[in-house]
Image (cartoon, rainbow over all chains, first blue to last red; front, side, top):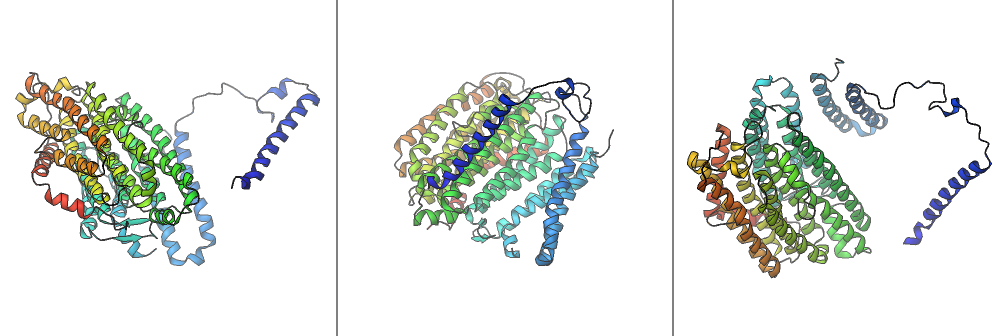
Amino acid sequence: MPEDFLPIAVLIILATGLSFTILLLGQIFGPRRPNPRKGSPYESGMRPYGKGQRRVPIHYYLIAVLFILFDVEIIFILPWAVVLRDLGIFGLIEMGLFVAILLIGFVYAWKKGALEWD
Amino acid sequence: MTTADLNVALPFIIVAAWACILLVIDLFIPADRKGLTALLAVAGMGFASIPVLLRFEESNRAFNGMIVQDGFSSFLQLLLLGVGVISVALAYDYLQRRKIVKGEYYTLLLFSVSGMVLMAQAGDLIIVFLALELLSVPLYVLSGFAAKSNPESEEAAMKYFLLGAFASGFIVYGIALVYGATGTTEIEAIHNVLISGVSNLGLLTVGAVLILVGLGFKVAVVPFHMWTPDVYDGAPSSVTALMSVGAKAGGFAALLRLFLAGFPEIAANLAPILVGVAALTLIWGNIAAIAQQNIKRMMAYSSISHAGYIFMMLPAIVDSDIAPDAISAALFYLFVYAVSNLGAWGVILALERADGGGLSIDDYAGLGERNPGLALAMALFMLSLIGVPPTAGFIGKFFLFRVVLDANMIGLALVGVITSLISAYYYLRVVVVMYMRSGDPQVRSERWLNATLWLTALGTFLLGIFPGPLLNLASRTGLFGLVP
């Protein structure tokens, strides 16, 4: 039994060893010429402003949660659509139930004013 | 999946679907008429009890054994639906007093009850986990229901959530190990594999212990009880009433079914641990309750100790001759405990003031003079929780101890009896304060609250005198028809 896991152990040791070796080699042989541009958080040229922990409107959180609701829905609908013909009427009813349950949550959030920005 | 499958799961489906529908209906009920939501929630639970009653003693399997129905599940479902109805009745006035009236309270309560109802029928570890989460998550939210005005409620919700999530992790890991050892998650199939010989018994044992730890958290047995006093104290009292009975009954439903139908042989190996946990729970729950000044904390420790009394049945089910008696004693005790405990919480709710005061045991001074009816009811509930005849608690404890003696666990029975004596001290202290000291307690009198108190007091008294019918029911449903 335990010897079945030997390849995994070898892989773990090799992977950690290799990454540390590469990092170490870079530390030893790599040239180091720091400048302010390189030290900034975004090398893409975005100029950071303010502190990292700014206050964010709590609405973002609600929107994010609602986004997840539909995101998950899509994840389930896509593979379902592929096999819809095989599933037949049963699949249609199942998905109808699923969407209906999500819809209940959506109607609830809507009526509670989660979609109003102010 | 067939209609027959759906039919077996009907009680759960009704409660869960009704909770979804009620969530939407509640949006259109104006804020000053939330009583209607409460009434609809009760109607939903009443409706769900019809299929339970119609085929009370039938045995069915559905969804390839994921959901099972038998006398055991019917008994518990009826109990849990009743607990749900009573906690709605307890909450109605309380929410208005604490100014936390929201329709969501009843919806969340329904979701939680649906999880409990599913738990009673769980025939597969996956369903056990699903039901446990469905039961717990609404309770986390409900514990924080008074968070706006009361920071303690928020603290309770946070603690309950974090520790509950922790416990769920244990259960999932345990399920994974059991699956690894047996190749199945179905409880019956696990037993079949176990009988025919498991190659890796150690793995299965570790899995069973992890599940035991996780469920131990939920039913609050020592040493997994740390969260209980804080959560019971901080949560709104009406939620605590539901938590102390419903969550416990749900957890024990899973524990009993798993250890009797799933791996009784493992339970036999674990017997010393099970006995130890039961004894520790009894000793610590009862001794720590003595020191409490706040009645909610006292009742929290009392609920820990009662979990210990029921937990005594787990090492007893190892012996297949005793197992039926053990299961029926546990079912009967759960019922009796639910009635007495909900009644006691009803009295606590009646004395709790709008500002959250009135919860110290000293606040009960003078209740015997000012409100003799309420004091008499409280005395009855306290006596029942001690286990004094002629109350229901006596009969319940009598059968629990008889099973323990039949199983030859003399030591555990001694611990149980001695701790019952210790428990008399703190329960009777409430009675003494009510009758022997003068004071001016403020009592809230409300229709539904009073009706609940009458019902539970009558139940506590009548079950103590005529336990026969319920006892018969519990013993007929004792074995699931699953175990040879």
